[in-house]
Length: 231
Image (cartoon, rainbow, N blue to C red; front, side, top):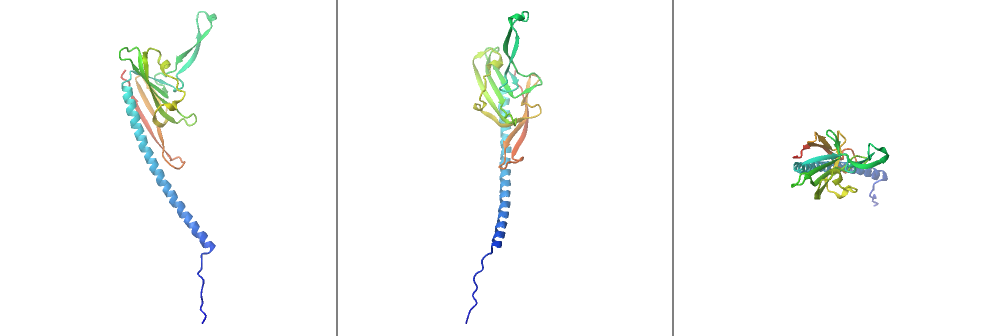
C-alpha cells in the first residue's frame, strides 16, 4: 500500500529576508538605546568632573591669592611685553631713536588670559621672591583651552620690573593643568581686574561627555568667583 511521504518544507528566500530585516531593526533599536544610556553615563560623569575641577581651581587659587602681595593681569601668556620706539633725547632729534620693551599689563576694569600673583621677599618688600602664573592657552580657532599654572621662585630676589621676571613660555604643555578645558565668557578673557584690588575669574569649564559626536556630548558649567591678595 503506497504511503504519501512529504519532504520537510524549508524557509523561502522571502521569509529569510523578512526575518533578517526584522532582526536588523530590533538590533538597531537596541543599539541606539545602549548608546543613549552610555552617553547619559559619560555626560553625568563629565558634570561631576566639572564640579571637581571648579572646587579644586577655586580652592587652590583662593589660597595662593590670599598669600600674594599683589597681582598683575596680562592679555595673554605670550603677550607680556611690547616694543616702543622713542627719541634718545627729545631735545635733540639728531641723536636718533631707541627701542625699549614696555609692560603690557592691563589696568583697572580690563581683562586678560594671564594672571600673575606676586610674592615679595619677607626681609625686603622692595624685592620679588616668587611669582605664580595662571594662564589659559586657547586653541586659535575654537578659543577653548586648558588653564595651566607656573610656580617660579626668584632666586635671588629681584627688583626688576615684573614683566622682565616672567620667562618666555614657548611650550605651555610642560606646565600642569588646573582646568582641563575652559572658554572665556562676557569680556572675552578669563581674569578681570576689579579696582586693582581683586581678581574676578569668570569662564566656562567644558568636559567631553559623550561617545556620539553631537551638540549634547559636551558638558559645560560656568564658574564665577573673586579672589583678593592680602596686599
